[in-house]
Structure formats: structure tokens, C-alpha cells
Image (tube, rainbow, N blue to C red; front, side):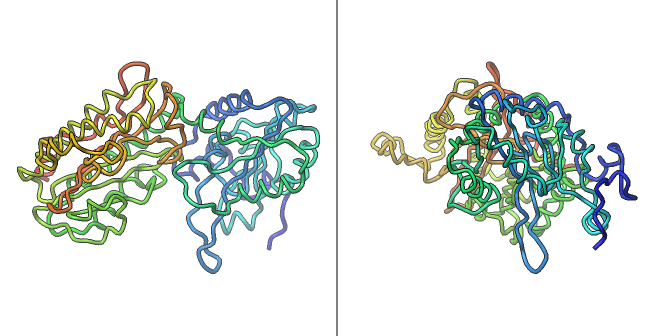
Length: 454
């Protein structure tokens, strides 16, 4: 192994900041975002408290290969550093000014540069994060020991998304265990409630990042519209969409894409994408591009042969009407859990109109187990941002700047029809902003684009 150098700036692999931008698929994000995010976080900390954050670990896949790595969303939100082996200490009441914000990044060398590629040096880490005190990750434990003894409270972070299942071991849980063992007499607080509150309200910079992700997603959808025809395979459609995401500087898919034809569309999280698209069937595509770690989440359902049948059109337009009515309800002050239930009432009427439910049966139903759930088993909205299922409080009144999906659907297994329509919405104090307003959604639009002469 090549001997480590203390100053990568002297290495033949040193690059200036402008050159470094070419090593990321996405353009450098405005550093003001991360500076402001940290300011907002420390304002909510208790006096004389220190908060620590860590990057995600690389999960082994086999032999010396790892699964695709993605940065811990909270660490990224606070630093903009998209690199493994990264730590952050925030200590706003520290007795020494240089301890108030300390960023730790992996010390690189020529050997790492050859085998893995460019990593941040200290100057670059400062330029991306806005943190002046940058140290190598090898010094994290030593400095944490020093600052923790000056603090009375330690904030630890964890994945507290209420959609998360199980209790997996992560870099965060391992760090929390080590810190509590080292400092058993300290008071402890959770960072997650603060992060959830902050991340739910998107800044203008974040909205612009989401707009870029949406624009890339739209390009993928338009490509699929011109490609799909009877006989193509779901995985071929996925490949066309993926191509468009990558060629437009997207990191890739924001989540595992759903490309589901026929009855597959009735499986809500179908991701096999292995079946052939047949004449007369519908194709549901739930796909979104990731850009700068920010996620788009689009769903559209199209006819494989370019023309909706009369029944398919009726169901599609019923879903679209629910989507449009639901979108009107999305504003500051709404409670997400209540909103999801209210949309169910709208869906009931559409299902009765489609002869899938009977009005008399609906009147007699158990409200705790509504009949519409047979054909519409999921909620209408979830938080969106750095995570596709982003953090937020579904039981509290939402504030302006929150971004949600709007995604009603109707799934009729006996008719081989599964239709979902999904856009991304910014909540305001007035009319909601539909980030996907330019993505084709009407039946006539979709059919015209699919039958446009090439």
C-alpha cells in the first residue's frame, strides 16, 4: 500500500473544486443550504449539549464487494458530504470556538485515489459543507472524548421513520452504543424529532433540487411513452427509463422501480419487472429519479397498445378525479393522517360509480374497515425529500414547505386492471404547487404521445 500523505494537496491526484465537481453525477449544491440547516438544528438543542452524527456504513455483498452505498440522509442534510466514513460534531456552547462545528472525513492517499477514486481533502470538505474545522475521521473518537466531557447532554441519532420495520444494526446504532458505554453518566436526547421537524419543511434550494429530479423523471416517462408497445418486456421499459435518468445527471432511481403490466399492477410493490407487455393490457410505472440525494416519485399508468379501452378509461378518469380533488385539499394546517382518511370518502363515490361498490353496502359498512380498501388499500400521500418515504409527523398539522406525494389508485384484480396516478406536491398557505404539473397525465395527452409518428 502506498504510504499515506498528510496533505493530499501535494498529491498528483489533487484537484481544485471546479474539477472535483465533475466527479459527481450531480452539480455541487449551494453550501448555504447546509449552513442554514445546521443553524436551525442547534437552535433546538438543549444548553451545553453536543450532537454527533455518522455516515452510513458500506454493507458487504460478497467477497470484497459491497452493496451500492448511499449517504445517511441526516448527515447529508447537515453537511452536504456525500462520502463514507464521515462524522459530524455540533457543540454550540463549546468553550472553544473551533469545537462548535467539527467535520471528520476519511483521510485519503494516492493508493485510495487509484483504487476508489477522488475523495474530499479538507479544503474541499469545507467548500462543500461550510464547516471550517475539518479533521480526519481517525481523530473523531479522541475529540469526541474531549468535548463530551465538557457537555452535560449528548444528542444521538437513529432511523425513527415510523415506516421502518425491525431493529437493524446500523452505523448509528453502533455509535450510540459506543457513546453510551463510554459516557454512562451523561443525559441523552434524540436528534430524530428535531431532524423530522426540520427536514419536513423544504427550503427554496431543496425545492429546486426536487424540481431537477422531477424534470429528469419526466424525461424518463416521455421516453417510455415513445417506447412501449405490445411485445416489449417490463425490464426493457425499466432500462429505457434508467438510461434517461443517468444521461441527465441523476444518481439513478430514487427507489427500486415498479414497471408492472396487467395483473402485476395490482401488486403494490411489484419490482420483479420480468413480464412481457401484452396488447390490451395496461402498464403501471412507479419510478422516480434521484438528483443530489433528493427524490422524485412519479406514477403513471398507460395502455400498452396506445389506446385505453372504454373500461380502462373509465377507471383511469375516476382515479384522476380523486387525484385532482385530493390535491385541492393539500394545504398548510392539514393533518396527513386525517387527509388520507378524507380521500377515502372521495374514492368511495368513484367506486360506486364504477359499480365496484354498492351504495347500500357502504352505508352499512364498519367505518374502521371501509369497503373501499378492497380496491384502494394504501394511503394517498407520504412525505418526500432526501428519502422517498421522507420523515415527518403524520399526526401534526403540516407547515408550508412540506412536500408530499398525491397518489390515489384503483386495483381490480378480477379485471386485470391496476391504475395509480402520482404527483409531487409542495404545501403552501394557499394553493398547492404541483411539481409534476408538466408531466402528461390526461388520457388524451398520453394517447397522443404514444401514437405520435416517430
